[in-house]
Length: 355
Image (cartoon, rainbow, N blue to C red):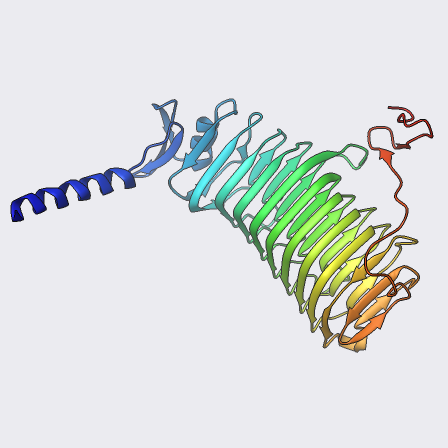
């Protein structure tokens, strides 16, 4: 009986070891000083540059790759095609060059369990995706980017007439970024949950010209200390934002809603010891902005609440109401339906004018 038990235990140990040593169809690993990659279960090559091995494993895209080691990147990770997924397995990747850390321009890109560190003093953003829809970032950290940590936008030029759609971000940490921690531009459908920004030169999180924004929590600390940016900023005609909670501590401004941003509702806030303003709403015109509860304390100069036009603003903090729109229970009002491709409204016949 004892012998049988030993055999069973040995089999269990062997099975456990086999499970730990799981192999993937497309993967990158390290042996000695070199990085190796395989695709379709065939070893393809090796390199002293981890980025070269990762790009080799990515091939033409439309695949899921697993990076089983960390190390230095001496070139950009370039996403080569649609429906590409990268699993970083909680490894850390040090950017040792002047270009983007990860560059994407294809739909369906997904990045999981990935930490990007460093960058030279003149290097570009940590992660950038431009002109691509249906993106997903989960458990991603960008630590020490000299410029923007993560930037997601519709196109590379400044003519922001195009749209992309469906950005999902969960458990994102950006620290010690020279500019914004996370910045978006012209995205229809933004979902953010568990966003953490620390010691960023400009905004912790900044949404520009985005529609249908849903945010769980943003936790910003010491972002935009020396300027008028904020822990969270929403600008350039953002529309319909639902935000559960924002914590903004020792930032330039705590929260800054401006530039035609409309239909914004924040459930609760915790804004502490900001240097310029606690909460600012400005240039929102007839578009309602609401903060339903929370505290704003310790703002330098005493400017806890800065409302440029109180007509459609309701801010309830510190047991006090600010603004002239606190009689209603939620965001209401007339909505204008616009064809985003043409920028023209719906006509009376129900057909899109200029579609």
